[in-house]
Image (tube, rainbow, N blue to C red):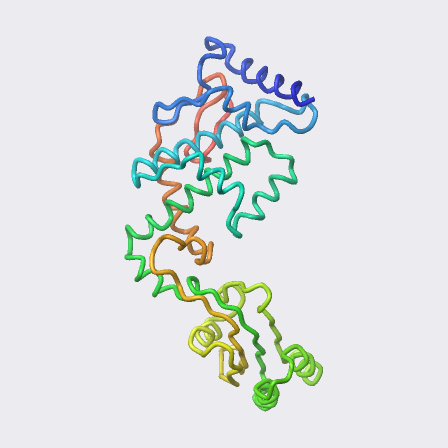
Length: 301
């Protein structure tokens, strides 16, 4: 079935290119660099019945390869960033935590080696380009200092109360060595709906994703290992223990590993859009034409 599906993909491409000069003609070029039929076939999904492979699927795959080529070319031209085969293999073997889920989804979907390598390439471009894009706008040290909630990783335990007396009572128990979850449970039962309990010590997410600004500021300023509070915050009175705090990096080497991905996406997305807009992209007319508005291939009329 794999061979049949692969042959079907080739047949679809050849039929799309029938008006051209056969299979030797590239399906597309990006700034003069050709994307071959073999490359499209290698990356295209091969799971399922061959009859399900259609021209729309081919255009979708080719659109992805066009974007990938444009990004790789721009990364090298603008920043001297070259993605080596060794780097791709390392990324596939040991993906950073932020990409583990992405590769797991590909594996669950039965992705081919070419599809997994394509994803690895794109992730490496993203990780290599983003700190450089930031550095063009603001020195990295200033960027990190201005975005501490996004660039500092925290593990903490926190209770937020609306009742200050209950906050003081619970703080005294925690400072006396009682178990956090037991105190949180007792506080919740004593004042239902008025106590918030959050134990982040196991997952260590960025505080910026789960708590309001005043609690973040508190978590950034208190000593680690001690229960502090109650402290007034926007949502009430907080009692908190920061169990671990990783200071932000000093440079670009591991910036992507510690900065909230939402903040980084803003910079990469702007660069991505600029690259795709200025790239000279030509699609074989038998397949369609490139649309910068929708960033994809439009079927021929």
